[in-house]
Amino acid sequence: MLNKETEEKVAEMLRIGVVTKPHGLKGEVKVFPTTSEPERFRDCDEVYLVTKNDLMTLHVTGVKYFKKQVILKFKEFDKIEDVQNYHNCDLMIDRDDAIELAEGEYFLYDVPGCSVYDEDDNLIGEVTDVLETGANPVFVIKLKGGGDALFPVIDECILAVDIDAKKIVAHVMEGLL
Image 1 (cartoon, rainbow, N blue to C red):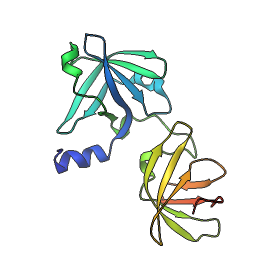
Image 2 (image 1 turned 180 degrees about the vertical axis):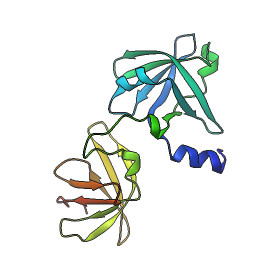
Image 3 (image 1 turned 60 degrees about the vertical axis):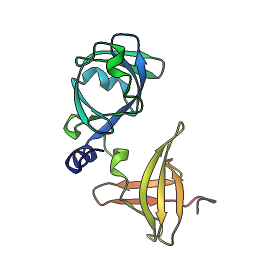
């Protein structure tokens, strides 16, 4: 288990990928990118690997792309045995190293905790999680009356997101509640 201090530090970071498995024999890993711009790995000098018990600082020395995955080489690992235990571990970066967002863009990590309102400013509930599906993200909303609802993050449903105000305005599509 991560200690409380490390958990708090990780909570302030941004996930850019998840290690899927080793690649080759020289300590490389395949990474499923969770960033909208996988090319950003070329600009990463340092990332953090979150394991069950530790937060490791790693230095990127090589980046390759294969299909929808990124293959990374780290200074700290030289053989397959060094990376075999990191399946499903998150790769994180400091917020200061994040890509700049355009006007109206936001990080999905900032959405949990936001209140969700309908178009008439009635409280629907609060976002508790964001599911990343193949098509589009989905907000998991704890409804004010109890239970959960899933709202797809599409223009027809999510009308406005104000991270600073922690407020989301949504169109309640038929069948969502």
